Length: 128
Image (tube, rainbow, N blue to C red; front, side):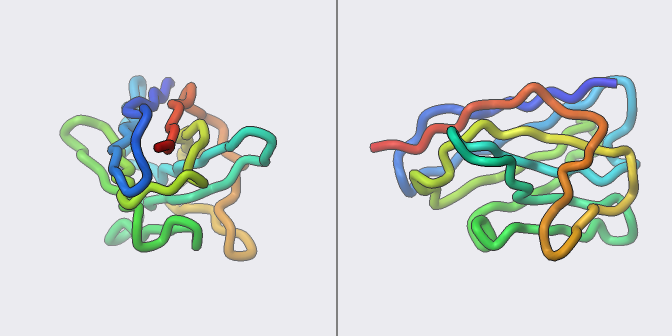
């Protein structure tokens, strides 16, 4: 069971990037998948999640709502995070993760990072 995050890079403020989370060894469409990020000197933040239950309910942290969109391509066994209107505060290492559960674990309004399976992280740097 492996997750691999990719698609990071250097982008100017206001720019866009699309991150990919590809899985091997299991079907991502059976499970909720979350995106997290960790900026230098800060704790890990859960920013988005898509469930596998029903219509695929989504979660977004306030910090990214309206700018980031999570989606699936089941044929490619991949979950994407489309990031637009990027800000310098979005600079971080981004990780995808799953606990192989069907629902996103949102506790107290925040996405829980108690996931068993993590990708290796991809660096996103927003700078002019």
